[in-house]
Amino acid sequence: MCGIVGFLRKSGADHQPLGEVLLAMLQSLACRGPDSAGVALYGIPQPHRLVAQVKLGDNGNHSQRARDIETIALKFGAQDLSQKGSYLRFTFGENGDLRPLISAIESVSGNVEVVSVGRRLEILKQVGSPSRLEQSFGISGFRGEHGIGHTRLSTESAVDLSHSQPFWGHGYPDLAIVHNGHITNYHQLRRRYQERGVRFYTENDSEIVAIYLAEKLTQGLRLRAALESMVDELDGSFSCLVATETALGFVKDAFSFKPLLYTETASFVAVATEEIAMRGAFPGDYIVREAQAKEVQVWQRSTQPGAVLAKSTLRSES
Amino acid sequence: MLNPAARHNLAVAILHGVHIRIAGSAGYYCGGLGDGASIEIEGSAGWGLAESMLSGTVVVHGNAGSGAAAALRNGSVIVHGDAAARLGVSMKGGEVIVAGNCGYMAGFMAQKGTLIVCGDAGDAFADSMYATVCYVGGKIASLGTDAVLSALDPAEIERLEASLSAHLPPAVRRSKPAAADFKKVIAGRKLWNFDKREWRTWQEAL
Image 1: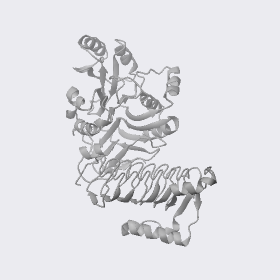
Image 2: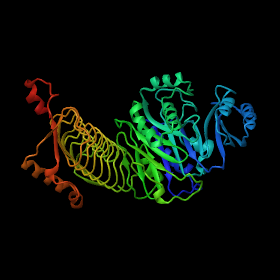
Image 3: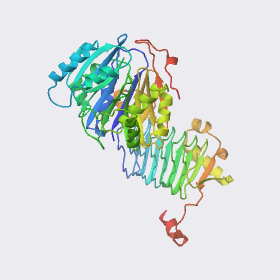
Image 4: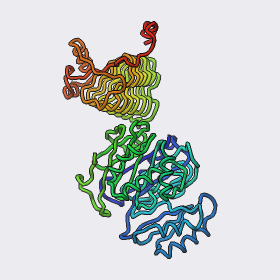
């Protein structure tokens, strides 16, 4: 099971509600996965600054750990520090290599993980059903133009915050994925990545999708080409939604094992595991269709913060 | 039924000759296990549309999800838009018409009945079939195992045209290929390994 959703508003206005849209879509799919839920929200960027979300731990009081990480983050120029539940959030200057900051923060404890870094991206996830996202983080107030979400039914790995989705493409700013299915050559791929020194944070097969795409985009592939290569190189069942700072896309496996539907109107693009997620969130008359086997779609947005898109600048690359 | 917002299991196992109109989209298994009802969906339909339907008619004005008309026993399933993967798999009778395209592995192990796709068909079309007869108006991405092309005879073209004209709105029918231009796909029978002594039993079972 599991349910995934994605949304991209075509108006180009960052100051429109985003969190409440994704929450409404996810809540319609809550019966597909009550174990954990999360969202990757793409918000309003600050010039030349990145925003980080750091998981402090899975349970208990993390105030001392938060102070330790704040001390480290401040050495890297962190500002706007705030703690909400198990997360510490801060912004820092865009200086290229993220690894020294990430290594320093994650050295505090094995339970600490930098969950996301990006100009726009903020990943928030937790154990429990989608409704808890609102209780824990008040995500309905988050504004932005695009995002993705996931509600999980665990089938093969632990139920905790780190194993929840979305997954960040560690080290690649603004890349997030959600996945419904099973990657059956996961262990083979994982071994090959580990031989090259790639760190895995979980035993969830979906994490390999984020690592795979981060590698492909780092190598210079465009998102569409990276998604197309997934069809050849990843085995098993996958309906995956992917978001970057400037795009929303999906890929479906060669056998069309898992559902994934999408609609594109004059004002928005929505993608979800079931149509019920769209009809609940977007009243009105629009056509929904199921993605076919091997289908890849990518929709681009403007890279200019707050820019209003001409219709022709937002396109399906199919 | 007004705007059910793609909820699942609508109009399942209706055993009477009633007409049900769904103004909006339906979720999974709409019309499944029915016996005699006429169901019209103005929007889209999710997975398992009319699955194992015994008799009756299901018409979808929009698109259909995976597994539409799977294990269909009899009756008609008409989709004005596209159908996703595994259309008509293991169907055992009846008639399926898709005005648009169909996805991966349509007709897999279909045993009897007629499967008509006016647009393009996806990969592995008509794989491992028994006695279902398929017609495709557009391109076939690839034929499945043991699926072969066959010529249409004049009587067959006439029947195909009659069926399309009867079930599709005139404007939709006019936009599709002429019946004579459809490709016919049947089983090549290379996978039919059962003993011929069982032939009559098998035919009767179908």
